Length: 336
Length: 235
Image (cartoon, rainbow over all chains, first blue to last red; front, side, top):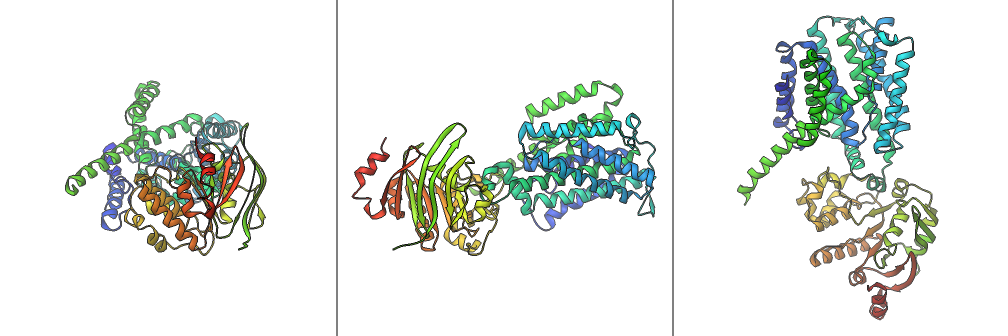
């Protein structure tokens, strides 16, 4: 899988962010879609679907850390709670999967506004701690309340049929469903980042005082970004439930909040493809190391340390920096 | 010539944490005027601009703009009233290119320059449009920092040391731009250490010392007051 992911690192933004219009830009989009379409015939589709769910989660997280500079340490709350909600409405109310996802995602938008209003008042470590505290409250709710079934979680959730027509029971059909959700989420974030709104977010990240004095109410922008991020994290969690047919406490723990930080940093914070690559690496690592049990966390920790020490920009960040360097050394001898 | 005061500061006091920086600044700027604040390092010139803009939060006294009290407003509200601030460090965003830096500030009202007019005034920015904002030379960054607040429709500009650290040719160019802006009816409050430069562009000068206005010199009296000014500014 990692080779598939790597080929995508050279995608639309891999070349350094310049938005090239026309065939050259579309080429990478088309390549990406082909990879998504062909991949399940080469690799176990459920595994791929898992990667895509986590990739979407990491993309949501990266929108906040990479483009607004806010490190949330409580995104598992949105991911996990959305999983519970969509699992519950699917199993108990018998709604179709897309309706369940919509209900769960919309709920996370509301939760995102509430948490955001509290958290964005502070920056840096305080912001991280406030989000952690809020997500621990959600964890407590998930542990105690009835509809989440505490330690057992919600099990045996039916995948149902998309729009009531197309059954998602087979591995391939659920994979394509997840891939569809992923592409929509990815395109949405891509649009946000490249819109004027995205530019204001970047300016807030870089110099909030300057953005304010140019006339932007930066708190409103931060709140909106937080809400979008929470909503997308919810979308990822709600989709993941369909793949595993299980909503459990794992998804709301603080470890899950840490996992998404790791994915984003490993792949490359502030790059559009970084979180996707990071999710691919982390999920693959979990799979490969599953047999050796608890040693996984040690290996994961070592990789994280290595990443921070050797390639701080993450995989995608380093690759695109390398491409940019190569391009400029190519250009200069000709010009000079 | 009597003109209505656009900006009126009365007994403005500002604190940074425990330290009391401005001890009651009072000044007036009339519409269409170019006024400089002269003074040594640490006198409170920049703080005065930041207090007008609301960036120095802990302030007391009165800052009236166009007859409206702004001392309790947040910076973004003040910016929306039509005051634009160009900080000393310029505040160019390194994650945006020149064109994006130019178009980032919101247009708050009609009457701002169009992008074409901005490029007429600063042709270099058109040439460097795709470059990363902070990869420009110091002079070009200064041009960009001034240029991007002209699009917004704000007619009152606060410029903090626009000539600092720049080559004489660039300083001259910035002087010309300030004169063009003045002709177009912009009101400018300028912080300067270089009073030779200031005397070429400004109608009036205030001298700031220890957080107070200690003197006022009109533009055409600079040469006769040269010794006095040098005493204020000399180290």
